[in-house]
Length: 179
Image (cartoon, rainbow, N blue to C red; front, side, top):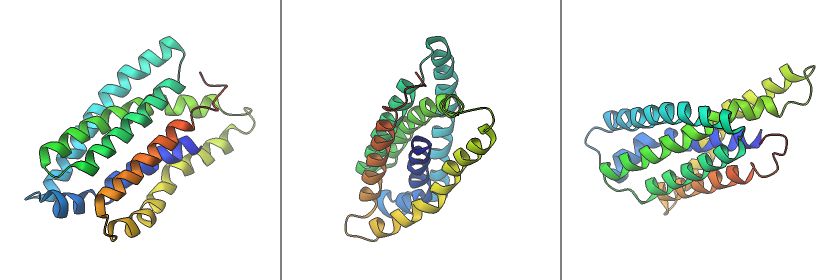
């Protein structure tokens, strides 16, 4: 649950203030269009990477490695955003984020379903797992506001997001029933 929550929190941190980051830090002439470009790049690479990684994961019967790699690559993409001051740098970071997110979503549901205790409680546990998808949308602004309004600004937000992604990678270590 915590792995899914933290990864979705990194995604929410990326998206919630992206428009404002592109407007005030990067100085994008059309921040709305720039958000669209970042989103499309991330989405396309996520889909391609998820399809390929899911197939490899199924063949190798491995899940943890893909989830951990996805989390660490996501951290790298968020660090890239923290250092970005130009649109080409942001687009490069978006590409890294797309690969990281794709690796994670390729195995996310397999990890969740492979971690269920019994078939009698599976529905309840899947419902609890879904909270890990929606709750980060509420938590992200609570984390972002004090960071963005501080002297450290948006780079601090993306540094913290990278730290959260590393914490997500560490959540894969105790997953024993899911290889």
